[in-house]
Length: 148
Image 1 (spheres, rainbow, N blue to C red):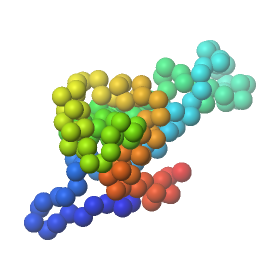
Image 2 (image 1 turned 90 degrees about the vertical axis):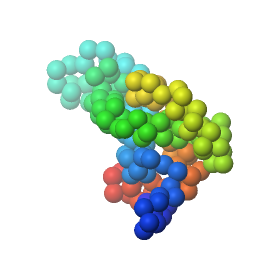
Image 3 (image 1 turned 180 degrees about the horizontal axis):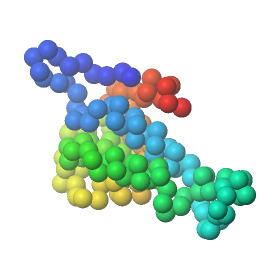
Image 4 (image 1 turned 30 degrees about the horizontal axis):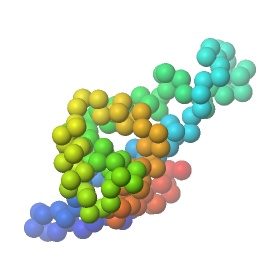
């Protein structure tokens, strides 16, 4: 993981309040969620092997990935949630890295209690967050190596 340096005097020159590792975790999980397909078997058999385990690849309402991501995002501080939204906006090519302060201010004004559902409703969330991190000089390469 490439991280911006933290100086010994306590000043962090990173523009992020959320750790890049947390964002990388969300990216990996969001990409798992994005890979899901429409439900073709609304009432899967009691034995997953009867259906060739296809429900694992379908977007069911009780999806454990969604539950995990929602719980993780909801547990973040307000500043961390704001960073996530700002990173997603930055990564979808609406802005560039020099706009970070204004993007974050816009995300601060828009913040509400529905951050997780807003982000999970965004197609390609993982890609947007990854691009946003990249624009700010971070990479998830090392994070992903040990988890994928």
